[in-house]
Length: 377
Image (cartoon, rainbow, N blue to C red; front, side, top):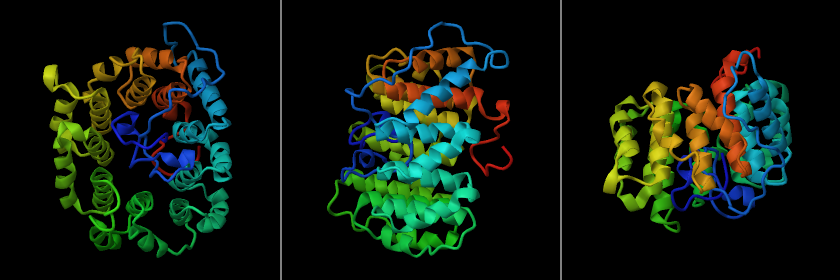
């Protein structure tokens, strides 16, 4: 999801590939689409009443919880705040039957971050019936949006020139470089591995070492997706970065979680459960917990995110909602998500709504998996 650039660990540590962020504010900061953002504390609350109540209704008997989550996302999708609009699209991945309207709105959005996410969603779910709308976006003013348009069209079976991605990968702009790597990894063409390998550590002399390292990790992730498992060692090593490089550790957690790296589980457990003086920041602990849930949801130590549901920092409450949504479920998890759905911060509400759809939506409502072709929803 999106929010602002992650310069330090924050909800950031988990919001998805890289660092999506400033795009929603139309700044020059790097961004991308992967659940990793932070939120301005001054943002207004969505104009929705809290659900109230302490008991989570049975899903089969009370679809109201899911309906309430969808209502919040509907409002967020029409918000004047691009951060809410973008995160609403990603949350709706768990209710793909209602996704079309969000994508269509996103394609016409005046914010490049929202357009990027809409296009990546169009491609992910192979929305062939609206694929033609991506053609004009091959000439978008944002190279990242152009990359997403290439991905969307290719995934939908359209003929599209992939060569511009090579030029983007050579860019000195970390946003463009990282998103080009993301798209190449998602396209699945192993012939891109040498090109990705040659991009590691290049043309980043004008950005901070931390930002350059994040980009290199994204490139390594793309290579693993294309079959170069040798890159896993470097990604795993980033889990042991110094404490002051919490953003790097959190980002490495995200990557091993997305890649389903079972061998990283013991290290993730340590990051999540360290206590005393060795306990890591909340953002890193929850990033590690989310990664565990993605690899093996039964093993996820949900006491970690549950411990931040009542935090006075809304960023931590939002990250807790995201982490709980990926967990194994159960009444405790759903009670917590219901509480967060009535939070006084709109971003917390949006993450909670996505978590609820992930927990009680999906196949239980005949919507299928959010990870593959939309098929016959």
